[in-house]
Amino acid sequence: MAGEDGEHQSGNDEALVLSRLEEDHHHLAKVMRVLEAQLARRNDDDEEVDWSLLAEVLAYVSEYPDAVHHPLEDRMFDKVLDKGLTPAERELVHFNLSQHAEIIGATSRLAADIDRILNDIVVPIDVVVEHCERYLDMQRSHMRNEQVHLFPLAQRLLEEADWREIAEELARQEDPMFKLRQGRYDSLYDHVSS
Ligand SMILES: [Fe+2]
Ligand SMILES: [Fe+2]
Image 1 (tube, rainbow, N blue to C red):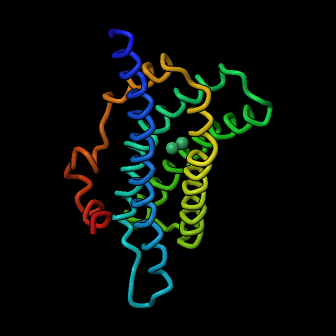
Image 2 (image 1 turned 45 degrees about the vertical axis):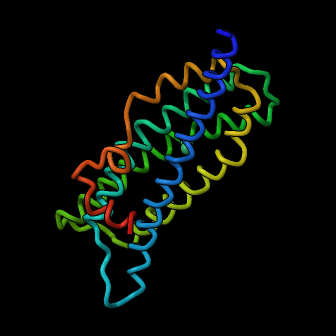
């Protein structure tokens, strides 16, 4: 009976981890749509990009996806690397891990650029917009790659004990906007929930 409970609990751990990661992706996709909609305003003479809203986007990404979501995935992918992988699978995992570092760097560079715009320091807006567009593409292709290739690989290779250890991290930090509804993200939250 105890064994059955243990198994049930472990199956739960896998579901808990994957549902948290997928929910995070769903939330980040919503936030990226806000970024995309703001960039599209440049094509309309009557509309201006709301740079403070974009500053909120970058603050959110650096506080939660960059600081909590990717490290949780790193923990999962590190365990995947300990399993028997084909060279192609191994390369896929390493590429994804290095993309985390790339995304985290890009978030802080973009946040700094937007901060300069908000402080009326002269910055080439076209270059910032181009960086935002590249950032958007990278976030989207990164999530797609994880959903299509990496998560199924983890599901295939990780064992109950692995999922249990990863699941222990889940309570570490909740999403500050979608879960904790912290006030500093109020205007972004209005946009993602409208
Ligand atoms: Fe990731
Ligand atoms: Fe992810």
